[in-house]
Amino acid sequence: MKPARITQAFNAPEHWADIPGGERYRDALEQQLKPWLAKIYGFHLLKIGNLSAEINAESCAISHQVNVSLQGEGLQVKADPLHLPFADKSVDACLLAHTQTWCQDPHRLLREADRVLIDDGWLILSGFNPVSLLGLRKTIPLKRKSPLYKSRMFTLRRQLDWLSLLNFEVLHYSGFHVIPWTKQGGKMLGTHLPALGCMQLIVARKRTIPLTLNPMKQSKAKARVRQAVGATRQYRKP
Image (cartoon, rainbow, N blue to C red; front, side, top):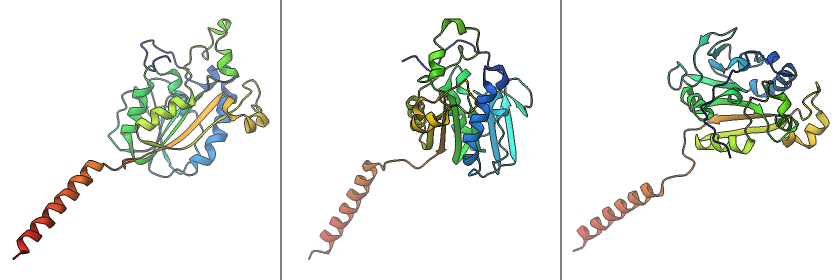
């Protein structure tokens, strides 16, 4: 398995139109996002990356939506996604639409999103699936000049492991748009073979309550109670 963090610099596309078939991917992603964006409430939605900035999030009840990236059009804040200029626990939701696809350090990107998210905040991730027709096309040497050839594709299981380490609760994950060169993306195949979809979507929430209690603390507390009870009994004996 290749390391997630690399030193190679990426020239991330500023628009979906810069990617072959990018507008079809954006439309398919927006259709998958609509039911989930309608469930998100709060004050601030952070759309990280140029591709996230072009996602239509009108169905989201959060009116204050901030686009963040190093450079591009339609941005409210110009900053490095790996060094977000926001206070801890100040954002209700983060949208990372294919941001990891052209990121040198996806681990740090997720940690930054975790840092700025409030407790129970929403995190939405999307990316390309390496186990798909699009991933197979990426192996063709003749496509080296394409932005897709230079993109990074992570398996769904690997991304779920990253989120579990950060104590995120995954509410939904799926694959869709199986056939990349069609507008509908093969809805019939997507229904029966979602794992082969060329695009992935993950919806998760930040949890702060530990998943398991610490038995060490419980045993110490019980021991103190037993000592106190034993001392009381000895004191009451004639």
